Amino acid sequence: MNRHVAIIGCGHVGADVAFSLVTQNLVDHLSLFDIKDAKAASEQLELQDMAAHIGSRVHIDHNDEQQLSCADIVIMAVGPSKTETSNRLRELAETSASVATWAPKLQAAGFDGVLINITNPCDVITMSLARRLALPEGRVFGTGTSLDSARMKRVVGKLLDVDPASVDGYVLGEHGESQFVAWSSVRVGGLSFSQWPQAETADCAQMEADIRRGGWDVLSGKGWTSFGIATAAAKLVDAVFSDAHRVYAVSAIDQRFGVHIGQPALIGRCGVIRTIPIPLPAAEAEKYAASATVIATAFQKIC
Ligand SMILES: NC(=O)c1ccc[n+]([C@@H]2O[C@H](COP(=O)([O-])OP(=O)(O)OC[C@H]3O[C@@H](n4cnc5c(N)ncnc54)[C@H](O)[C@@H]3O)[C@@H](O)[C@H]2O)c1
Image 1: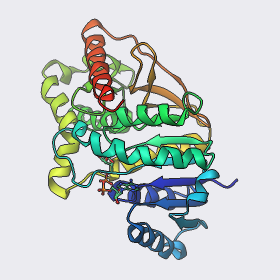
Image 2 (image 1 turned 180 degrees about the horizontal axis):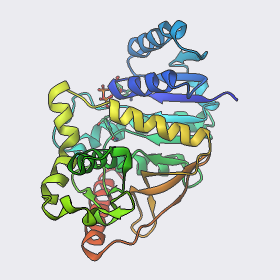
Image 3 (image 1 turned 180 degrees about the vertical axis):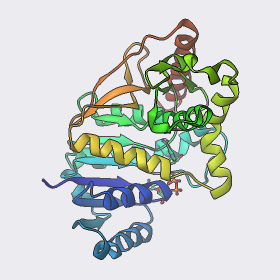
Image 4 (image 1 turned 90 degrees about the vertical axis):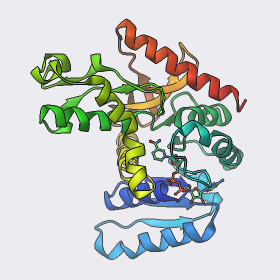
């Protein structure tokens, strides 16, 4: 099997996705693209420098658009010229213009695989790419609230003193300021979060703020975020190649609201196999609807 991934945008995020895919042996052929040719070329060279230390052989090329025709998965990771530090929606004008230049190239190449979007604002850009590429539903999805759900697991795990991997549940909605923790979905060891004694005195509003602010906290120190999202993207690539039928919180179409939005979905060879609408209590359902409105309003601006 020749697992071929193309990464468009080789900045902090795209380069770390490439590093994760190569070091985790999740790819056989990697095609790197960046508007700055020297950046893509140097990422190619440095990844090739690792070849002697890794147990797999990976073919790597850069800025060769012919490669888009045979890519199984495209990862969109282009970014704005200036890093946004407070609201991902502010990236929209610039990043929507950038991804718009790639849709016709992908179509001209006959790209017929799965596209995973990381570029922010993630839900709006995913929606824009899904409409432009017109691939079968589910083939274009975004990393959505997968990273935010991982942040929730870190914060809840810390409170309960359990490994985050033992925390189940989701952050839903926009990968942005209107996201929310679906506390009703959070379970640890078969108990709902509210059944844990620590939950009685927990400041859930503060925990939720910490989760929402997680990305900005990382960014304020190192200037960008990349390890978390690169790991999430690698998991999604693995789920597609292995037809895993595993559940992740991704940005997928919710037909009730007509938007791509963070929600649990089953991921396999064709991308999103189906979404899993969780029954939410009224207060959480309201937050979900409000978040869908934020995404729809932003999308209107680029139509
Ligand atoms: N979804 C998430 O959870 C998540 C997490 C972190 C970052 N992000 C987003 O990922 C994106 C990338 O972030 P980053 O830190 O890597 O930014 P960055 O500035 O380090 O890299 C962006 C790269 O895109 C390239 N680029 C810009 N326009 C391009 C175009 N038209 N064609 C090809 N390449 C182009 C730039 O040359 C640059 O190398 C941003 O939108 C950021 O907000 C999303």
